[in-house]
Amino acid sequence: MELRRIAVLISGTGTNLQALMDATRSGRVPARIVLVLSDRAQARGLERAARAGLPTAVISPKAFESRQAFDQALDDRLRAAGAELVCLAGFMRVLGRELVEAWAGRMLNIHPSLLPAFPGLEVHERVLEAGMPVSGCTVHFVTPEVDAGPVIVQGIAPVLPGDTPERLQARVLEVEHRAYPRALDLVVRGRVRIEDERVVVRDERPGERLVLHPLLARWMEP
Ligand code: GAR
Image 1: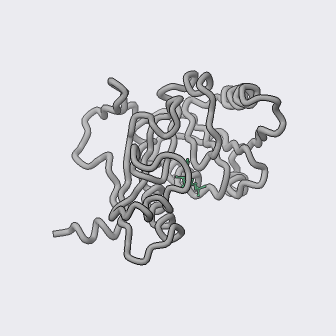
Image 2: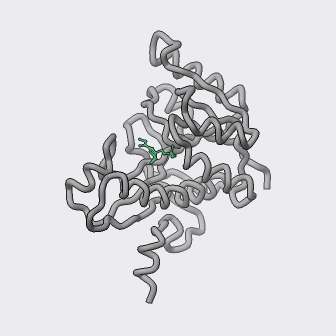
């Protein structure tokens, strides 16, 4: 199968980038990362990419007068790299409508909650405040409305007694690292289409779009 060309956009640690690098390198997901781009030169994920020999780029919004100019520079760089799909992996900037629409159906994002619940920032704090017994993550197509596009895969993690935002975040990250490669796999294999603003998966097996945290999986065993 021909490898699809992926760009990964990051702002921070890049553990999701790592999961995507591992899944593509091993051949589990038929894709190749052709660019890792950050809006912050200090993003630790850039080191991961460089160590793996992947091309990296930094485009800082500070270098541009408007968001539109920043978005344009981003788009130019993505196209120059020959990217076919874009994965936002902890990329902490909101992209403008024009850029998002140019990449409609070809730009994915991961968010650390079970969308449509808890869009936005400080997710784990709000999940704990609301007393939710479960949380998780969502991989979705990016649309101009933030954290609202069609859902491809979700991962579920339990909230445990005594959780702090940091502990919950770590548990949710574990399912993120399995959910993102799963979602990318469905997309690069051409099994996903968007119909009435929802994702439809060809030959979907029950539970294929759901990832359970290992604790949940164990509790649910017969
Ligand atoms: C992840 O938890 C991701 O879901 C979140 O940032 C973290 C990045 O971690 N993304 C958002 O909140 C987007 N709104 P990573 O750099 O280790 O992959």
